[in-house]
Image (cartoon, rainbow, N blue to C red; front, side, top):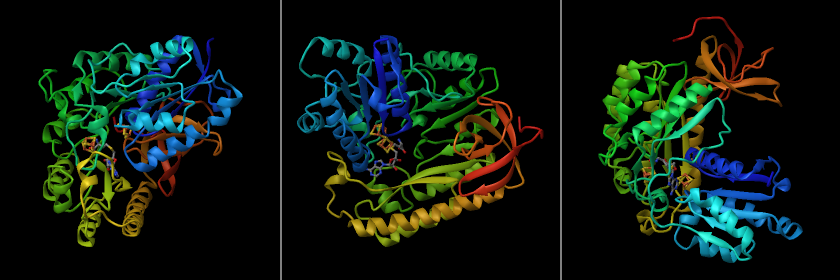
Length: 444
Ligand code: SAH
Ligand code: SF4
Ligand code: F3S
């Protein structure tokens, strides 16, 4: 064994999966995982810069290592991810934290091994951040930590340039993986016993839009769900400007595709959507929800919402509230707008004061919680199929999600992690469900 590694991950699911790739590199080099940061010989920060508070977290946690590094000069500290891709950020990180040994970007994770080897030979800090994405690297075997769930990238990067968003600047232009690579990966995951496959992309609906794959997203989804075996398929994120009936038809055809669509609306006001450069209207969004529910009445929708975008009036905000009520989302991630350097919205003059932003987010969170709680209560008495993911030590209960992402807790004599279990729901507490294992027949 070379030593122990510890990875600290911030940000989206894609970054969580990227950390699994980083773990794969470290494992192959001979490192072993430790869950205790103080026992590590190498600590990797996989950062996010989507909002200011994501960056502040990373700054705080990296800063806290100064003492550890003093006590153990052999400790290696590596910082990668989206923050290092930001213009000028590596310089700031270098100045603020001279004890960082390695800096790499979100676009060259595969170089990490070379960088570590170089650092072990050289005294000085090793920095390698690439401005543009190269060819997709296919031979990075991730060390997966989320059994029975597995994440599979279908696209990288983003071309949309929503005016508030930094992702296109740090993750580069959209690239689609070849269908044969995606399908081979899913096939082998299913053969290994994974029970839930989530296809990942910033905008999954634009898969293959550059003509490089010979398949669009609906066709890819069809091919993935046609793979034999009992497993669930999820996909995220869908973009309302591209979400379409073709995808819903494929969902209709395959019961193994979860009846849940994550469709970030961001705002309910057309004026704000236009300034955000989202390229759809409130009406188009509602049409899509209608189409989805006509074809799949049981379908649920989750979303992302930003409040306090530059120029957002009280009237605009109320339109968001009205839309949230109308759609009746299963859940929603709600964010306060955070200006990101280099984006168009950060230059806009009519930034909203903090107190107005705070007041709006509080109202919205309250509304979303009320809707989610009501949905939970409707579960009581029903039997749902749960994929058991883990054992909650504190509660002394097994836990797993239904196809709509709801967490259900239950008692079990035997270890059932990785198994589908029918749960009769006896109690709902906020967003959590509690139930008893039942023999009732499954939906499929
Ligand atoms: N590709 C996905 C989401 C990526 S980021 C999509 O297009 O929907 C996840 C969420 O973070 C976004 O949906 C948005 O709601 C939020 N977000 C992105 N940039 C933000 C910013 N500058 N301030 C606040 N929230 C932001
Ligand atoms: Fe950001 Fe928009 Fe791309 Fe999503 S679609 S990653 S919000 S630019
Ligand atoms: Fe994800 Fe954050 Fe990067 S949300 S793509 S890790 S900026």
